[in-house]
Length: 234
Image (cartoon, rainbow, N blue to C red; front, side, top):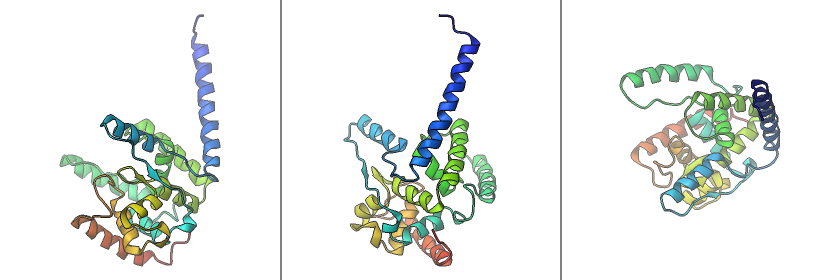
């Protein structure tokens, strides 16, 4: 069978159409049902097996209504204070991070990310954690989808249930039980702030055994929570 350009183009169009339909359908489904597993969870399990370890995957989905109100407040304070206002992207923050990264590149230091909670949620649920322009473009696409089809409360609920919070630990409930021996529903402000403090690198830092740096970051987050308290309604 001779393969022509027309045949290839026809299949490309079908694949693109399938991708758009599947992405929209899955986004709508996840508005109502828990996300069972994410690409990052699968990758981490394979990494553990590759290192000769038993796969670790501790997670338990809980409604945001069954979480301490301190937790979403702490995450917003630490990660994305304009989360309730923006449509997935904080343009001012992106410009600021780009300028900071130019200085960091000149010094040969690692660059920082400027992703919003919506972007991080989209990346965690739908994409693999690799740095590339294609992945970033897909992240933008899925961020628009969840902002269109999900409420801010749902975005926060999904984020707090799937985000990596430790080695093999995903979501608020698993983190609360692991680090503080209690349910996420009764976390105190300082405990929620500790969980939020380690999110940039949850496998390096430990919310249950915070370093001096993490304690300083926790204290800063608690102060920010005080400024935001009463202004956030999810």
